[in-house]
Length: 589
Image (cartoon, rainbow, N blue to C red; front, side, top):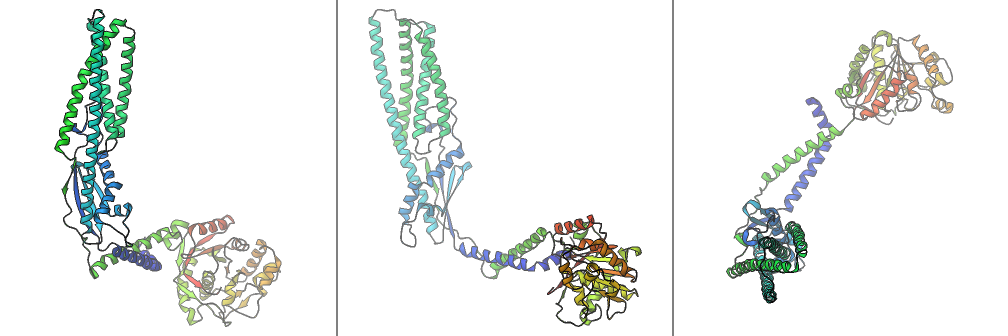
């Protein structure tokens, strides 16, 4: 698209530009006022590795540690949980305008947590319009989170200690019962030697029982973990391993059940003794580690950076603040203009005609607003100072039309448009005047009975005309009327009652006879046709003429409407010489 078309689009849609720019500017100002004075402050918390060796009870085969991102996300959930935020509200005594304590959601709206996974840090960013409140909010959230985590850690350690102590007691009881059963078995005098093969089977079964006890302990700890939350993926992995182990243990038990009673006893003594002797030191060692950790009171989280100062966003004042906003608003206005232009499917310029319609472009009228014709005096194109400019502008377009048609196809030329009252009649009258200025005797036929615009351009006493010639069969040469231009005669539209009372469609043969009769006397017959809007008359008249000129009102019809109208006329045999874009507007018609 050429620069002049862009400028023309901007001029036509200047109201869109100013509206979009104004809306954008006002919204920008409101947002600037809404967020003005917002202070920010940031505190930082270091998170210990949640799945390091000391955090696991036992190293279980194929146990997949939880992802670091998932661990950090669980910490964020704890930080934003009700117990932590409620303590923050109480510590800072946060209240609304009515004096009531703020709800959790409103406080969370002032806090943003940002996990930095690669550094094992969670940043707590707080916002407030009051000086000092953002720093207090960030620091309080960090403190309350650390306190809550320490509490959860203590509860978790105590729960683990109780569990391991109970398991050790079970192992001791099991060992004591085992020794009693073994002593009783020896007193029976039965040979107490176990074969190497049976001892190996008992060892494998004992290893499976030990692994099962470790997995059950790890599942117990993972499900009840308070600090890092329940890791469902890890629990699922452990449960799958436990299921496999239980199947193996069941197979060992089935094999043992098939043994003779003596061998079965020896097998169970060897299995249980080895299992108890392996589990007890393992559980005891882990219990001792946990008690040492509890005594040292090591914290899995710590504050590494307090929000000591607040940062207020830098905002320019005065003209310096308005200038960028005004430039952005202007840019938004331009985007709106060209967006509206892009979405507009109407025919506006020569490129639209050649690209979208595929027809020859004959000319483009300038913008011209014509008044209504309440006056009864005769107005002749080119004969009045009011319309002299219009006549000069139309002369160039008429020359293009004249050059577009061969001599044998200039006898009857019709002017038609898909829309009523778009300057079509004035272009037709201008063309007639142009031909008359070269010495040709021209008849201007007003066949547009609905608008009758040509009849108003050339008013007169007699109202008989085209309607009487077509519907009543009167001689057309007796109905023509002269004008102040001796080379231009006019056949007016006729009385409206004739067309209305006939209730008949236009007869193509009758129309052809009327135009043929006029063509035998006049050098050229110029026909102002009714709009091709689907009503009767237009197709019959157009198909009776040698050629037609399509008048398209600029910017008032979309491409599809024009194409549908052209297709309908071409199917009826209408031959178009080309297209004239019209910016003429008529009022009161």
